[in-house]
Amino acid sequence: MGHVAMALLWALPAWFVWHDRVSVVFVAIAAVVAPIPDGDKYLAMAFPDAVHHHGVTHTVIFAVAAALVAGALAAWLLTDRVDGWVRGDRFDASSMFVFATGAVLVSWLSHVFADMLSAPDISTPIEPLWPFVDGSWGIDLIWYNNPLWNVVFLAVMVLAHGVLAYSAFKVDHPYRIEKA
View 1 (cartoon, rainbow, N blue to C red):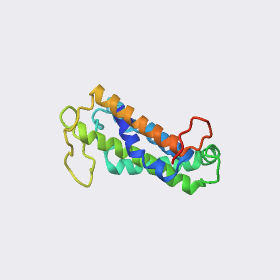
View 2 (view 1 turned 60 degrees about the vertical axis):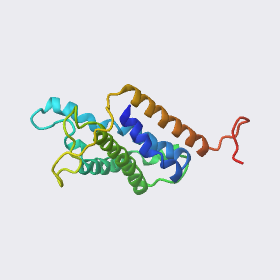
View 3 (view 1 turned 120 degrees about the vertical axis):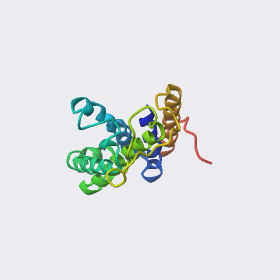
View 4 (view 1 turned 90 degrees about the vertical axis):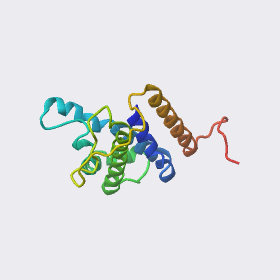
């Protein structure tokens, strides 16, 4: 929950850049990608001598590489589908590549940042700037297994996105609050 909430926090500016359905796509990509860096837990089970939690998948260089690969796959597989869903001619392959790469990068980096705020004392150290800088980086600001923190943070982010989505979509109905 905490990683999804942090990705939603980092994705809030999408509502000010694109509005309506395009923002929904950006936010959805960010929310779906947020937990993926923790896939290294499963890789560590399969390859215990080569992979550890908070290892390579929790680095900036890996985040950039993963975002570029995801952007290329999205450009190849999703351009027409997303363009149809957002009801426009906004996305060609190159703009879809940039858009998806940005969404994945924002989400992945938010995950790394969240782990830097919470993981140094109860998990393996995080080295986000490896291989360029050796040594772990982190601030023991929050306990990431705190259910109250995670639930409240996620609820606040969902509410914030709901408010911004409501203001972005132009829906005509009798209960819509109009701006003065």
